[in-house]
Image 1: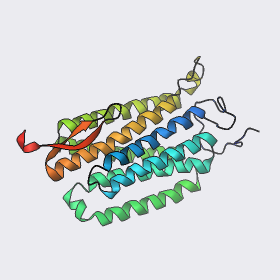
Image 2: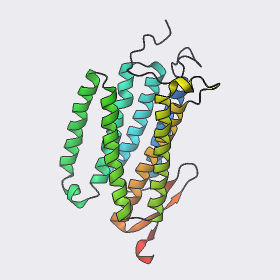
Image 3: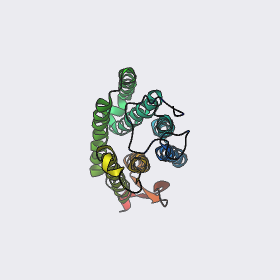
Image 4: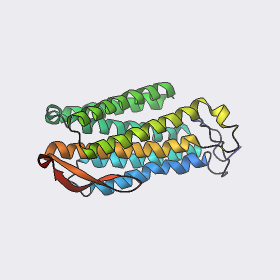
Length: 254
């Protein structure tokens, strides 16, 4: 018996179990999960410079929750911790869709209905998903919600395009496509990946890249909201992780 046996999660990733530590089932997947904690804290730091909406801060906080849940899941491969990875992912995407939806005047006026919709949706999903390991249904459901968010992102980008929004959405696209590509390779080609001299830890890189994409999705929403509300383009700063700063250019002057 190993430290966390028996494994009860509905999925076991391609990283060899207990390869680095006898107390951590998937060491590298656990460590890289904290990338989401980093972008969550980073997002809260960026938002402090703006008159941010509550939902934007909530999304950044949910990044932290997902990161901690993911680390617990990969460290133990226990189903109860798997839920704390997967269920908060729906809190993040629900918050993101809500944040984009209320940029429409119509839905801003009816935002209370949207709030109750997402609250009820996530409560129902919690009981459905926690009662059984609906892995494929979970993945399909999350894919649909991500698609809705991406459609909203492209809609607002086309309508309120600026140099800053173009940079944010371009970085988002690069990060999310790279992340899903590595996730698919790790999921579908594990047998071949495991035979390599060194496991490239594609699922760990998925964590890093999906954390980056989450950051850029939130920063894009912040840029777009500022453009809509103030008709000003936020400037972009930062090195490895770009972010908008509260220094803007009047779009009327362009």
